[in-house]
Length: 425
Image (cartoon, rainbow, N blue to C red; front, side, top):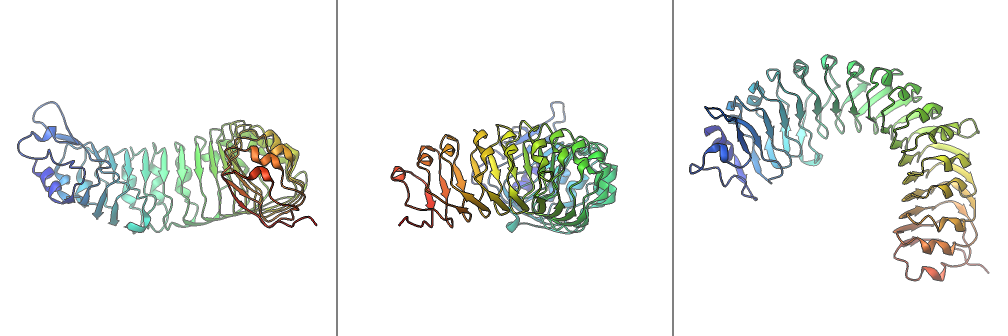
């Protein structure tokens, strides 16, 4: 009880009065957020004070709760360091401290041999300063199934010792300052389901055997780094992938035509790279993508795609909701294949060299909420059928070569229209 009261004393603000019951008139096992084992002597096994708005520090006295299995202090405003004493909780199985304002170095949890989940990610990076490198001692906790330390200021790279994690399924290390080449230790983690290391300073080529080594991956997020070279065709060995994100890197070459083997793919994001497609052969990946019948998001914005968009675009999943092909060098008429994509919410084709008129058949695509066609060479009149899109919230047509004025049918249209129009003489 004294350890819990010490924790209460370090809390300077308790806006939801979560700790009101923490007093001598009530047995500590009945205090809010506290759970104890049933047999005597009663010992605290769980402390859960998630999303209570608590302001203060984490008391080192919590390290005295030697029977503690679970500690969850997520989404509060706790500051200061994680007390090293928490590393003495040898029965601890789950530790959730994410979304606070903690700082300093992470302590060693080498003595927490039963720890399975370590989540110290902090989503508000501007208010947090976890620094230093990843403790190699974490590798001593071979039972870990999840590690998350995203959105901090962790430097260095993922230690080679991580190769000893035989059960790790989720590794989240995004938005830090990790540097160097792709961490080779990760290739030993064949049990990984989710690998997310975006928004770091990692560089070099992605190992060609990445998904051969990690065949159970369902989520692969490497965006916002400095990876280069070609996209390894071996990623299709992870047949359960549903999220594939290599955005904002320096990948070159073509999109592998084997993409269609990922039949469970929901999101395919390659934007902000240097990928190319011009000839019919270069565009064959679109034919293959038609096998991804669950695809909902497809983005290749800000690449080096050129020429006409093949009609095979229309063979992509009819579940597709988000299509981004803006800021390339695409040309020709408005892509006809879009007429088959009846569940589109966003279509973005701005910053290309499209010509001709916007077809009237875009009007029946009544799920559209955003259309971006700016900075092209579209001509003719703006189709009045656009006014049939009752859910449309943004229509961007600026910097084209339209003639005439905005159709009268747009009179009561609740959308933002940005246009440079040339009136017909």
